[in-house]
Length: 397
Image (cartoon, rainbow, N blue to C red; front, side):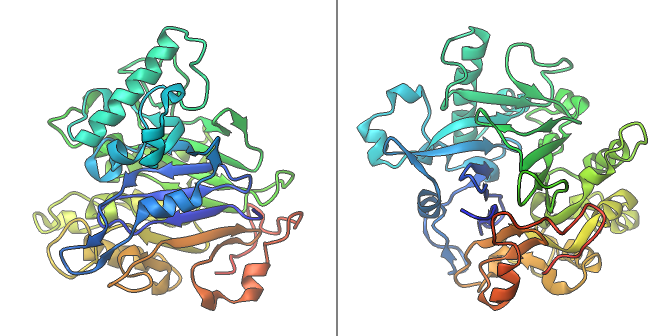
């Protein structure tokens, strides 16, 4: 495989994003795998499970996913986990699991909130699997760091750091995925913050405890600069993004470059909560976007694109998605076509994944044939120089 790729699945109000690195490492951000058929509006529901099976590599005749990142334990971010992903000791994977095409997850990332705020069947199944893996580390089991048992906690264990299990806290860079060091890819961890994990409860909104990361890509491991940046934030609201901005832009941290983005997954399915409090019409001040939210959008590189993973955006009172949020996003883009609604790509009646490949000039839409062979070829060659410096060139989009 000559390019890193990012695939954004159309899953209504939910998130499912598959990153496939050049070396075929696979990373899934959240899961909202619905049963196939027609939705309430008569539109075709995309078969995410079949697509995953077509995209994942097999090891010893079994489907494997290198890494699953659960941003937070809401149903629209873990739907389908219990049915489609294997839970238990990988050594016990059986013919019945194989017949059901259950996917073995080599490593999972989650937060401590999972252990106290799992309410739906899928999040409870995820919790049980995470507890199994965490116990291996607590017991110092010899199999704790084998594929299928790996776990990494993101954030804090209450008001303290985790003791026995691998973890990352905000401000960390992580480039070891499923036991392998990546020299052409890394994550920068922005959140969750300690206080978010302490104050979140099952009775309160769990969204502010979402994992927020910047994914950073190089064309070649020898390149000095990254060529593509993608921001993922689950359902984090404007309060969390304000703190992300505040901490990243402090001179002592010098992490403002960790806010750059070519691709930005609109938080909470294009909800107004990224911009201000809700309900939108409840108070006049709610209608004004927060300055920090706009500043983060201003960190766009080149022809950045914003992806809305939600149902069709209509001019009504829905939230999410929220049509005023869409309007605000479009104001920060070079052209309105750079706002991508997954619910109508390529058409509303039969949406399909939006796919980007990473080139030396930034991300290029691969699922659109009209992009043209010239733009697609620009970053194809292995060994191509990274001509897009941290401070320089524009995207080809």
